[in-house]
Image (cartoon, rainbow, N blue to C red; front, side, top):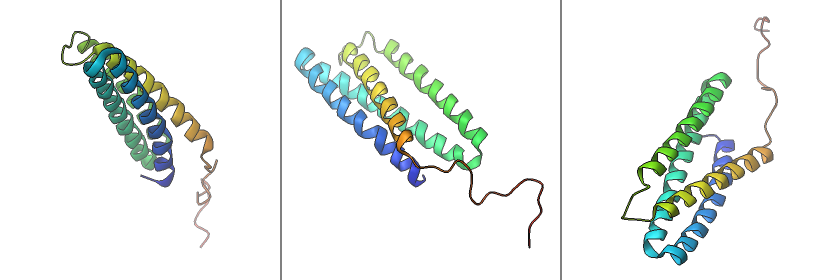
Length: 141
C-alpha cells in the first residue's frame, strides 16, 4: 500500500473503531452480554470488509485508473450486499443479539464512509502525473 492509502485506512478505521466501541457499550447496557457480542461481531465484519475493499482498490490503482474505479464500484457493491446478506442470515441468531449486530453494522458503515470521505478531502494528491509522458511525443533522448 502507498502512503496515501495508509492515511485513508487510518482516517477511516479510527472513527469506525471508536463508533463501534460506543455501540458495543450501548448494546451491553441495553441487551447485556449477547448485545455486546452482536455489536462486536458487527464491528469486526464491517472493519474487515471495508479494509479488504480499500486494499483491493489500492492494488487496482497501481494497474490503471480505470481498473481502480471498477474495483471501487465492485468492492462497494459486494460489501453492501454481503453485509445485507449477513444481516438477513443472523436475524434469528440466538448466540448473540441480531439487532445489536445490525445497528453496529449500520453505525460502523456510516463511520467508515464519513472517515474515508474526510480522509480523501485531506489528501494532497496531484491532479496530473508529474512524471507522465505526453502521448504522441517520442523519447527526447
